[in-house]
Image 1 (cartoon, helix red, strand yellow):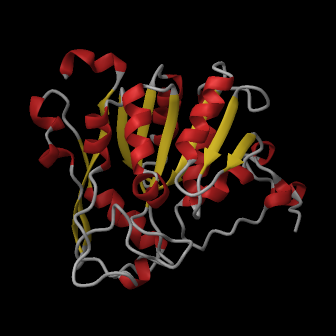
Image 2 (image 1 turned 45 degrees about the vertical axis):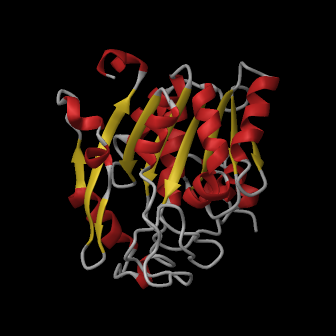
Length: 276
């Protein structure tokens, strides 16, 4: 199916590939908003979509994003987005390489690749659509699923989830941030900053999956999830030396009410080198 953009008048019609639309994403999914934030961020950073950028994604709902944007991109095998992106960057260091993939792809099967790509300081921007589930394949528990959430693969309790900010900091990423889909006015600016950063930049983008994850865990709609993100988000205080401690970077979740605390902000960047 081909979308007639002359009738829809989408704000970013020139940045999208009409022949790939409509998307496979469910109603209320955060991915549409997140992809728009990436497009806005790349435009703010001043990149030419025809020559400057390549988007790499792995398998999963997020993996489809590279096909929806009108830039060069690759939809790679499961868990291998980062080694593929490394090859692209080594082949043409002048390219701005963006990896946009999910928490399952980047931190379960792809977890080892994340650690080593971060410690090498490979110059790329990695954005994790962190919705705490394997959405495309039925909602299995992922590396960021909370202990008391319900999934088709949960027996008793899930494993303790990864704190992605803590993991990225420990692996040596030189730009580390976390925001949620609810901060859609702030995200493009942060994404632009991450793209201009010289080194390995990582953004933990806490996102909603109402159709698969939400319906099993008390979230009736995508709107409810965004409201919860806004209420739970707490901006970090970088003047307090303890803000990088694990207990202060961790997300807190209660299945009865949802997210209760999501520390957001830029935890590390090249302009903050004196702080860590």
